[in-house]
Structures are given as C-alpha cells and as structure tokens.
Image 1 (cartoon, one colour):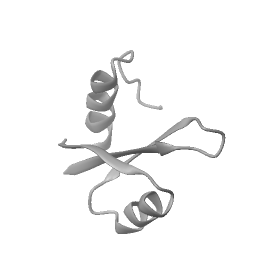
Image 2: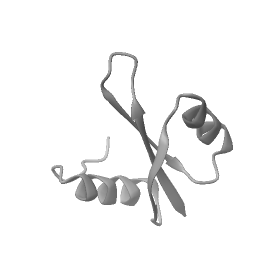
Image 3: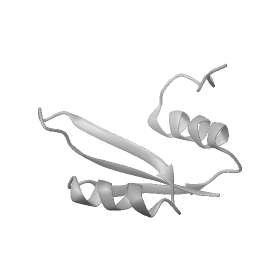
Image 4: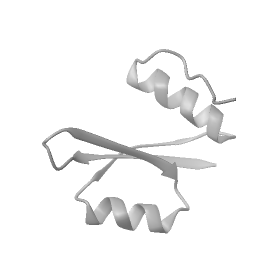
Length: 67
C-alpha cells in the first residue's frame, strides 16, 4: 500500500503533518485546501508498518502501536 506525508504551516505558525493512504482522495483534497505540500510517499504493507517507517524517517523513537 502507498502512503503519503503532507506538511504545512498551521494556524499558529506551527508545522502540521498528515499521513494517510495515497488512495484517500478526501484527505488529499483537505491537505491541499489547507495549503499543505506532499513531502514524502512510500510503500508499506500495513498502517503499523507505515507508522514505523514514518517514525524512523523522522528520527523519532520506534513506533508503538496502540493496544
């Protein structure tokens, strides 16, 4: 499955990020309307794998799925 990471400036000037499946047209439209830009797209077999890859990409601690 393909995932996309979109980033943009939030209302208070903070950086906002959205991660969603590339097939989610509604999420993409909302990101574009909010002035966000596509910053990274990648393939992962599941949401948990995608979040693990995203955390690694950002240099964060390993992703811990919700139980």
